[in-house]
Length: 123
Image (cartoon, one colour):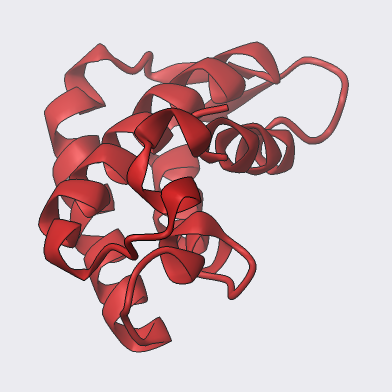
């Protein structure tokens, strides 16, 4: 499921469909602004499989995004050629954010089999 979330998120980052260059700072700010909303919507894994409020989810997602972006920022090119760079780096950062969130909220994860096995949400 996380892969589907990342793919959906990256589609948003890769628009328009023709290749354009986007400054890293602009891309990162956009990423930071949409991650909590996209990942914490009620139909997503991070809300369905954890006993958290939308506010708790969004706060944790924002925090995870800041940490993951800070850890990876030096590796991201100064100009991202969209859609390819946005898709690649969005997936890398999205996986980091999802893993961080999952670790922080592991005690609040549902015991439902679809939530316990991480391979179910990484598909």
